[in-house]
Amino acid sequence: MGSDQETSLFLSLILSLEMAVMQQMGKLLNPLTGKIERDLNQARSTIDLLNALKARTQGNLSPEEEGVFNQVLTQLQLNFVEESRKGEEPLTKEPATISEAEAATPDKDSPPTAGPPKKKEKKAGTKK
Image (cartoon, rainbow, N blue to C red; front, side, top):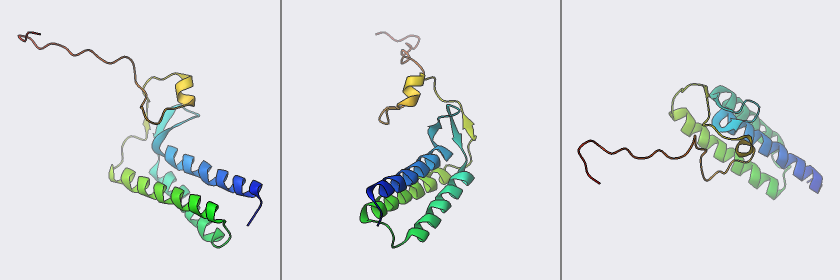
């Protein structure tokens, strides 16, 4: 087991790779382009890299490191299966219009909107 600094650095590496895979699966905006980009082959490669890293660190991780690593890997694999079932969609999508501040600090509970909600139109011949 390493120092607290080594644990922190190791967990930062795992979480950075997790964010990369989420971007590669099109679940997060690419912060450099501001677009949703989907590349499942790259996502698979990064998950494979994490699996190799897990195999190489087997028996050398603290319980905290192992727990975080297992949770991240399991969630990424489940998300990958979900994305794979969707089929091949366009690799790059333009996101809804959002401000730079919203892009920098996304609220994971509410998706970005392109503007105010549209008003419902009345159908011809109906009274309200």
